[in-house]
Image (cartoon, rainbow, N blue to C red; front, side):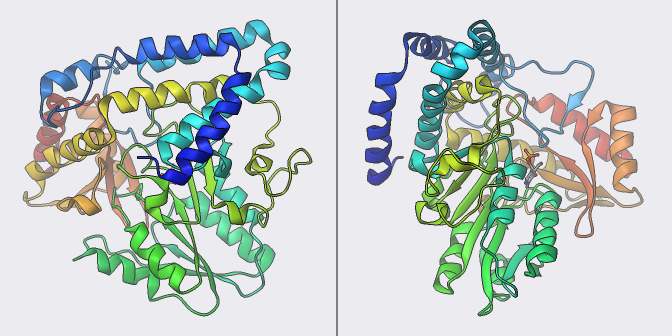
Amino acid sequence: MLNRRTFIQNTMISSIGLSLVNSDHLMANQVNTDSASLCPEGTGVQVNDEQYWTKIRALFNVPTQFINLENGYFSPQPKSTMAMHQKREDYINTQTSMFMRKEQATSIEASRISLAHFLDCPSVELAFTRNTTESMNILIAGYDWKVGDEVIIGNQDYGSMVDAFHQAAKRYGIVIKVAEIPLHPESEDDLVRAYTSLFSSQTRLVHLTHLINLTGQVIPVAQIADKAHLAGVEVSVDAAHSVAHLQFTIPELKADYVSASLHKWLCNPLGAGFLWMKQEHISRIFPLTADGEYPVNDIRKFEHQGTRPIHTLETIHESIRFHQKIGSKLKQDRLRFLMRYWVTKVVDLPRIKINSPYLHDYSCSAIANVAIEGYTPAKLSDRLFAEYGIFTVAIDHPAVQGVRVTPHLYTSLEELDKLVLALKQMAQ
Ligand SMILES: Cc1ncc(COP(=O)(O)O)c(C=O)c1O
């Protein structure tokens, strides 16, 4: 749902943008609408209505050689999204520099407005990047650090972000403190305390991974952000896995900065992400690539990537439409349902350990992590693939050791039954 400020801002920009949009672009959007209509409406559908989900499965190119339960790396696109991507690539290839010089700016703004509506934020606070890694590096490398500033990260944050903070520590003399995240918290307060207990008068920024990729655990970002702001601490969120997976809007996170990739759960083609930040912060942050085109308080200064695949950004309209046909709530609930479907069938078996909080909606997602006593993560994942044709990923991290299992909207219950059988046999 759009809040009033966002709606007015985006509508003003949208009407300026639309008067510039040429007929080809409108035509492309028309085609978008038609192809998204292949997706059946999710309104009123139950999480366990397998007839509906079988129709959704048919909209993806599902691998036939193996069962893909490693959908956390990036998401396959529905066939209609791939078709739109190809269509726009064909168009740009035909128009070449004519498109780049006369149409791309308007086209990018139209995509920005679509995404801003989806995230419920002003489009002037939204920069396109190639992925979360780039977004977070823009922020961490461009932040106005002072020697002795403290940043709080978590012990299960994504490696590239941890590396970026360590590089900033070497360059700018910042101090990194690490919150230990309990794998099975008693309540959300346990998670909030893990971060807030580290706040000091030197703390500038707390970095939160909204949905932890190792285990699927969800961090209560808004609760931590409330406490951070009271302590004068800014909040950065790595939302790589939560956008279009969990149901939320940017304002609900109460953060200062949010980074995400659109090729994960929004199912957009590879190579698009975003960096959102509150308007008041934009002028303070340096872009990663120098920009002489936009004023320092213009979010587009962060987008100076040189020549880039605009068709990937143009496909965002289609990716959002597909997502909305199913609906954020239903998608989130189905993904949790799939996780619990297999987890609850194996959790009580001897030798099996579930490294994810799977019971409470506030703490879980599609992803869960499983270990079997006597198996290293690599051995478990290798055997699942070699003997059962089930593709997962081994997680051998100081905080968590096991195999990450990530179903998708197209995953069938029969596939999960095969996983359950495999785990039971291996645990015997
Ligand atoms: C939590 C988290 N953050 C960031 C990333 C990086 O995403 P990308 O490679 O799209 O930049 C990932 C990738 O899996 C992730 O799991």
